[in-house]
Image 1 (tube, rainbow, N blue to C red):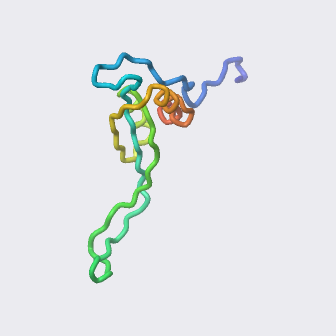
Image 2: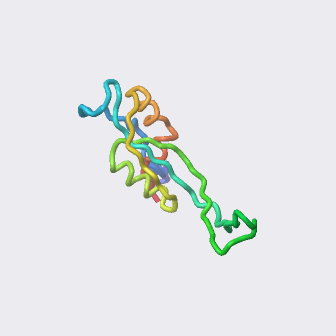
Image 3: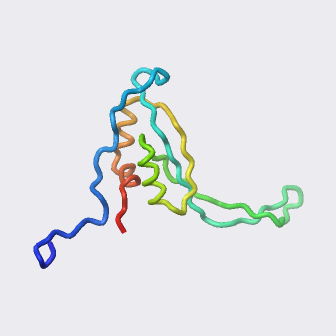
Length: 121
């Protein structure tokens, strides 16, 4: 509580269960739901490419990245929040099917929800 008697606002919005039970079309297997998976890759360093024959360094460089995830979501708005929360990461997304119970468990996992919680600056 602040001195004026007003509560101080939290730094993040309150996480709520993210899984939404939505009607699936006929292309989704029975007992399954379609969800999206995102994997974030964080830049680590640039590395000199070595010549395979001579073992000497070449003029080429390659980016070394470390992967995080996978994280799961159902809504494109969730993906936009994820992008804002991870502005420097390279993101790959995939649409997949998984059993409804597994999807609900993974989407509502606290670590997963944390990635899709809008951060107030």
